[in-house]
Image 1 (cartoon, rainbow, N blue to C red):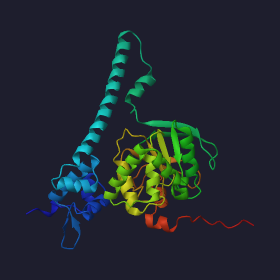
Image 2: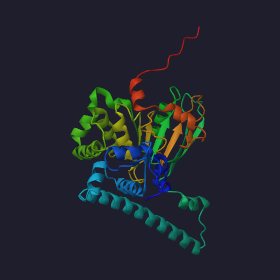
Image 3: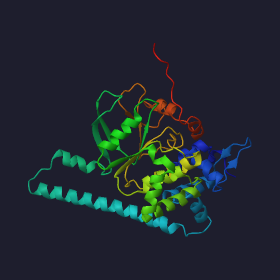
Image 4: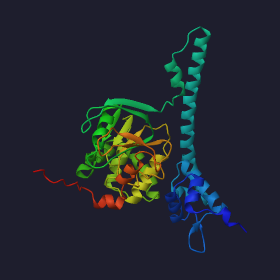
Amino acid sequence: MNSSAQFLNPSEAAKRLGVSVKALRLYEQRGLIAPVRTAAGWRSYGPDEMARVAEIAALRELGLSLSQVARVLGGDSESLEPALAAHQAALEGRVHQLIKAVDKVRRLRSDLTCGRVPAVSELARLMRPASKLSVVFDLPWPWGGERFELQDIRSLNYIIGPLGSGKTRLAKRIAETLPGAAFFGLDRLAHGGATAKALLHSDPALKSRVDQTLAWLVEDGATISEALVCVLAGLETEGPTILVIDMLEQGLDKATQEALIARLRRRSSECRPLFFLTRSSSILDLDAVGNDESIILCPANHSPPTNVRPYPGYPGFEAVATCLASPEVRARTEGVIAWRPQVA
């Protein structure tokens, strides 16, 4: 008989497996796992449940939806081919980058042999991941034009702050400053997403990509809506090197937000960086933020924006948590603005 020491509560199991507690609940809701219950009715994860969750997490890392995961675990391997093909393409991309790095080192060694000493900056670039970007610009109003350096741009970058903090102006300045970047504003929803519909109608390849992603998201619990189609049209459009999206959660229900951000997290780290303005705890789940994600906080007092790590006690963490609300609360307060009394 297994001892109680082998069984973990949801928080302990999630930490051990590198997933969120929310993910464990979702797997249970979809019938993929069935944690045992203690005498008091609490969920408990033993060796068998832990092994099953590890299998699910591995299949999710390959890009499978939960429905596809269920079919694979049930013995149907048909869903594996496209997932493995995409994983192979990502690996080949990394191999290509490594080959370029090796060639660079080889050239530097050859230069040394010929008596040419490389610059320190060139040596430093060898140790800097190619995907890490940075940009320097003057902060817009409501700041005072301070010089600001945005370092270590990652795959997913969240911009957050209270009302009036300047986060939208910061996002637009980032889109203006970063080479090849584009700002995707709330006007994407105007007239029922007419612009997105016209774009999909004129570009069959884009429509195919959007339809494929929609099917994937629906299997993960998303609801098809004009708002979702609009944001996917922007995400799947080939063109901008970097996309800055205003209020990613706008018009999306809780399940759709969770499915969408989970999908975006499983993109290859080689994909273009994305910036999201958000105040939704489903989009920015502080328990699920990974190593290739960053949080940019615009403080209420208009101090310069700062990077915040998702750990309680880290400077700015409480301010970020205070800005976040559940999708239900966000939906109830949509369009509400702060009231300030007139000064006599």
